[in-house]
Amino acid sequence: MVNAYSFILRQRTRTALGFTQRFTPIHFRRRFSTSPIARLRSSDLKHEDLNSLKVNSDRLWKSIHSTAQWGEAHRYGDHQVETGLSRLALSDTDKHARDWFVKTCESLSCQVHIDEIGNTFAIRPGMRNDVPATFAGSHLDSQPMGGRFDGVLGVCAGIEMLKVLDENHIETEGPVGVVNWTNEEGARFPMSMMGSGVWAGVRDLSRVCALEEASEKRGQKKKTVLEELEHIEYKGKIKARWDEGMRLGGHFELHIEQGPNLEKRRERVGVVEGAQGYKWFEIQVKGQAAHAGATAYEYRADALFWASRIIWRVRDIAERRGGLATVGIINSEPQSINTVPDRVTMTLDVRHPKAKPLKEICTRISEYLTEVERHSLSKKGSPGIHIVMRQIFSSEPTSFDSDAIRSVEESARNVLNMPTNSTAIRRMVSGAGHDSVNTQKRAPTAMIFVPCKGGVSHHPKEWCDEENCAVGASVLLQSVVRFDQFRYQRGDFE
Image 1 (cartoon, rainbow, N blue to C red):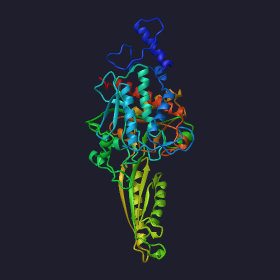
Image 2 (image 1 turned 45 degrees about the vertical axis):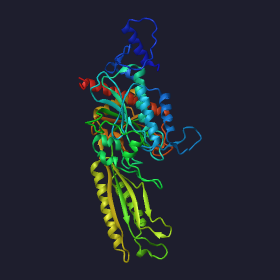
Image 3 (image 1 turned 180 degrees about the vertical axis):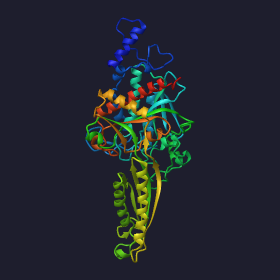
Image 4 (image 1 turned 45 degrees about the horizontal axis):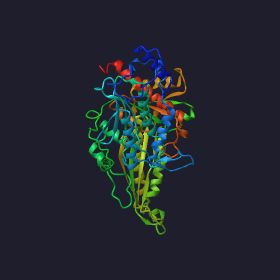
């Protein structure tokens, strides 16, 4: 890559070696101990040097779309890239994407490590390699009807970071790397942020390995996480533990916002301060099947009727307290056109940026379900309904590390060449859960958001413009280098 920064480096190299003639860079396979080229340490980089350290936009863009060949689905237009993505965790298409990740990182002379839950860590050596690496991380799995950018942007930007550091012959003080976390989406195996949760010690490895698919294929037994890890050959040998396995010195994640705020305000970068908490529940409404023509309303225990009232009310409860409630899956039985449904099973997702209101919303919903039960039994002649609400997942509100956030904010202003009071950069809280929520429990963490078209995500039409991808990736690159400098100055590498 030829840019202003490369020119600065070549000038310094010429001076260091006593050359006065025109200097031609040598292309080589990176080997720190044997490289004949004078290298520049990240601790030597000044503000003006970092200003020119940016990604190759065209190369990043091609990388993002080339990975869509594994799981390309749900075409919505005539252009080659106008498709979505269906690359469920631990599927054959996920394996192909993982293989690409490993092969690409190894071609950049990274050491690749896979842990027991399939988390894959690629490490680029630094001046000191007996310390935890600073990572860029995200995920390559998608929703069943997902888009091309959710998670993929962060992983591809991390690989682009490695390429730029190599091209500019930069030695980081400590190691840096890229991590692909397993099953962030929780779509195929119903546990969001699964791999990072096991790594952080908030999810039990044995229970996660026994977790079954959310839905089964006709005539086939549901597969478990362990079975599929072994099937795609990504059950690694190192411990899936932050303290016994791969240690992290820092974690930075680039992601599309998955909401409309940045785009509507015409802001370029979101400096993410944390993520709101959320809880998942399974709700079962049990009634009694009856003939649709022969059973009058007063004698019915219609599970679907009462479920519809619950769906409306939980949204109202959350909205009144500044939260969000969503029923994402609903199934009724016995699925007969002329039979009153006797059972409904549905999921409930409840979110709020603060822990206390989140708890209040969940408590009030539970109280309301008890009221519904009581009301149904008060109907003369009706057998009434019974409701069971079971929590299946929880992630508490998270605040990211102040030093990591500062690295992102300084990098964003540098990349955009913006003054301190610029409105192109916004501090914000993530509405969605991300692997960074788990890494923050064990390592300094921060996130970078870039706008996505219409705020659309988890949909085939999810889109992020090439320029926004490149801006976010450049912020990620500089954030990792800045944090490496910060750790060096703090004495982490002594």
